Each structure stands twice: as structure tokens, then as C-alpha cells.
Image (cartoon, rainbow, N blue to C red; front, side):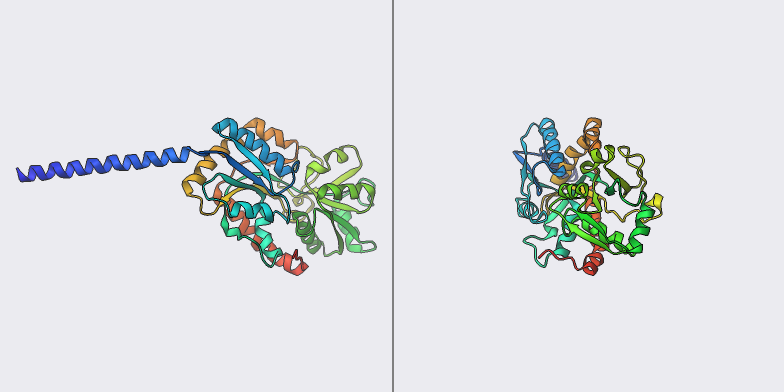
Length: 332
């Protein structure tokens, strides 16, 4: 009788344990599916109308439709994305304040500034949102028609090629430093306050080349005013099928650094919340209409795992540390 009673008690405890475990699993699942629980915001550390801003607003609109909760975009531009990045790094880690940023800035800002108001470790990656490959663009009347001809002209050194970029420490500037090292040629860096003014300078003849994404130069290339000599991509761009890749011209494929726009949250955000955001965002980035909408701007839309975002930042930092130091680039 005692043994039978003991078995009943044990079975009762076991059943209670199973029910408690199931309740915990269900509660976790419900919590993971509840994002966003209230109004959410995507902080963009660039001005309205910029590529990342347009991307963030399109994503926010789809999130509103998908989740039924308001998702707004906040522009916190300035200081090489530091202002917006700090805002999110110091936000409540509940998944309701996110950052959409050029991943490269999180890798190189600690190398460009002696002191930052936040630590990159205060942010954690959620997903890649889109990427864009850079072009080396010249005027249509330049004395060289191909990358090899331009390289030979630059090495000859009769006249320094002035290259416009989006500013000191930008992805365009760092790409220029990589190209200079590869070619062993002297080129003049001409920083502008963004790539659009640099393209204007190229059209006016103030500079001889510009490094930029397709969107700012596409119409000028099609109009015959500018010529793209090469693109830093694995494959030719459908928008510009006649432009060869770096590998096709015999150069390292990563001389022109691809830009990755990535989504981040404060680093103490629970993994279940990160997973919930990723699960909500990733299907949107796979929608044919969403992908097609940005393909015309030269953006390749697509999700990645959070670990890929973090690995990319580490790889960027490791690769560019010496480049930045050798070139003496500081933004303090």
C-alpha cells in the first residue's frame, strides 16, 4: 500500500512538472511572437531621402501591415552615424528601438575616433537588410576607357587622378585607399559631404573619378555623360550589364568595399526578442515586390542570420585597421 501511494505521488509530481514545462515553453513562444508589444522605432543615422532612410521607411511600412503595430522611422543624422548609433546603444533593450546603419561604420568608427560616446559592443546584430556594390566612375571623355587603361595612366603619374568620395573615413574613401595600395599609384582624395555632391563635381570636371553606388550615377551613365569602369561585385549588375567586375579585370574582388545596411538592437536585448524580430523581418526581405522595388536602385535586398552581421563587423575591422593607420585617417 505504501509503495503504491509513493508511486502515485511520484507520478503526480512528474505530471505537474510536465505541465509546468509545457506552460513555460508556451509562454516563451507567445513572448517571442508578441514583437512588437507596443510602438517601435527604427533609428536611421542619415538624412531623410538617403538610401538607408528610404529602405527603413519601406521596411517600417511593411512591419506595420504585418504586425498591426506602429513602427516609425527616426532620423538621427550626423557625426559619421555616431549620433544615431549612440541613441540605440543606450536605449531600453526591449526590442522597440532598432538601428538601421551601414555596418562598416560600426567596424571603423572605433579606429577613426579616439573616443566614442558608446561602445560598438552595446549593439547586437539582427539581420542584414540590403547590400550595395560600389562603382569606379569617370567622365565619358576621360583619356582612358577601361580599368586597365586608367591603372596605366595612374601609374605613369603625369597627372594625379582626383577621386571624389562621400567624405573622410567613408566606405568610398577606404575603398580608394585599397585601390591606391593595389595599383601602387598616387591619387588625390577629394572628400565631399556625400556622394551626390561628388558626382556633381565629376560632371563639372572638378575631379576625374568618383566611387559610389549605382543610384547616384545611373541616369548619367545611361545619358552618356559618365562611364563606370568596374564594379566591386561577384557578378555584373543587371542594371549595368556592360560594366565588368573587379575580378574580370584581374583585380582583387574586394578593392571596392561592398556596403551592407544592417539592423541592430541594444546588446542586452533578450535572444528571444532578437529571434522574434528576425522572424518578422526576414520574410519581408524575401518578398518579390520588396526585392524588385530596390533592385532598380542597385540595392540587393536579403536577410541574414544575426551571427553573420557580427562576423561581418569583425572581418571589416580586422581588414581595415592597417589601412586606416597607414593612411593616417582620423576624424577627431
